[in-house]
Amino acid sequence: MSTTFDALIIGTGQAGPFLAVRLSAAGMKVAVVEENKFGGTCVNDGCTPTKAMIASAHVAHMARRASEYGVLLEGTPRIDMQGVKARKDEIVRSSSESVERSVEGLRDGRLYRGHARFTGPDTVQVNGEALCAEKIFLDVGGRPRIPPMPGLDTVPYLTNVTMMDLDFVPEHLLVVGGSYLGLEFAQMMRRFGSRVTVVEMQPRLVAREDEDVSLAIQEFLRDEGISLRLDAQCLSARQEANGLSVELGCKDGPPREYGTHLLLGVGRVPNTDDLGLDAAGIHVDKHGYIEVDESLRTSNPHVWALGDCNGKGAFTHTAYNDYEIVADNLLANAGRKYTDRVPVYALYTDPPLGRVGMSEADIRKHGISALVGKRPMTRVARAVEKGETRGFLKIHVERDSKRILGAALLGTGADEAVHSLIDAVYGQIPYTGFQRHVRIHPNVSELLPTVLEELTPLT
Image 1: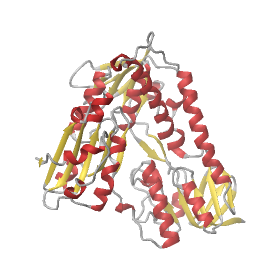
Image 2: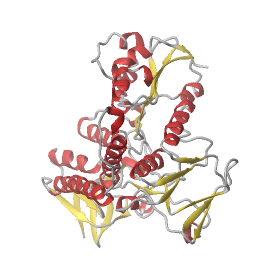
Image 3: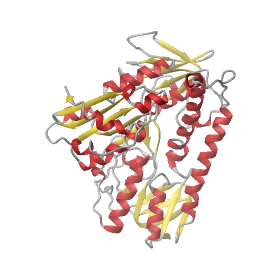
């Protein structure tokens, strides 16, 4: 005997709860299954806690720089990591409980706490109870990837999840992975007082970004005292008397790096390996991501996959957009597709990187004749006034159509300023039209039209 619902939602990340509320409001009988923490990665182990801790690290950094602004503080600022953690924990608790309350308050809905596993095309089992639904939605997220590094099983290591439990400052943190996750933690912990070494297998950090972006990030991280070991190959770990070490095989520098703690920041994998997907006829790719069509429907017509588990974004904002696409298509026959969205994201180092649209590599790959405008933050009044002049503003446009193709904004406020360009990229408006819009002074965004006055051919 099974309990039947109109819709069954597995997981409560950034797509599932919103979908549950909307389908419930539309009159559907909805069940939600959650086996762990409400809110998924973003609320518990990702955006919310890391940005809370980055905020604390920024305050520490600015306290050390106070004299530059004519502010004199007595003594050296001290870090209370237990206080940092308590502040972060309270923010996470409030956010998670808010998600939980929204699910518990569903009209004609039911919450199941446990692990869901498919037993058939439209049926799952939770705590021994069979649940059946005409429509099933997977929002099961992902988890830290543990690389097959020799010796890793002999040393203790941290991930982005277990980093959230630290209430002390590591003496020397080795960060394996010089990309988005690893760099945010590296800078944060350096500002809390750790010695930090970043180990990256590629020749430069955040290798997916344009080379000038990578080099600028490397420069300001090094200036903060972070050691970078790039082009590191054949990594292996080893326990040492006073901590651990990682063998690098780098072309430059010592062949082994010693530290007290190790953080793995080498990506994530989807939580799809224990859902019984075969029983439901749901296909996954070679990396375990659930294969979906443009409307996010899986190979099983009863099932949709949203968020990190479908491999189509891996951001909170793309997961939320997945919810919007699915809900609009189901309730309003909107014909929305995930392929309609423009790439947009941020790297929350300080200064941050805001990215929208095509990179230089994308432009060259598609053979587009393009122009580029670039302006250093030293020539942005707002940045000068704030004393934060690292980075630059860079925008690409198509030569013939004059449409804005994309931008890489690296500097103070760039994670906000990039939003000025999102509608321009979506609308494919010519940059000459974008330039006519009056902006507030003093602000980083006001210089974006000026960047477009200095266009040169992209070589």
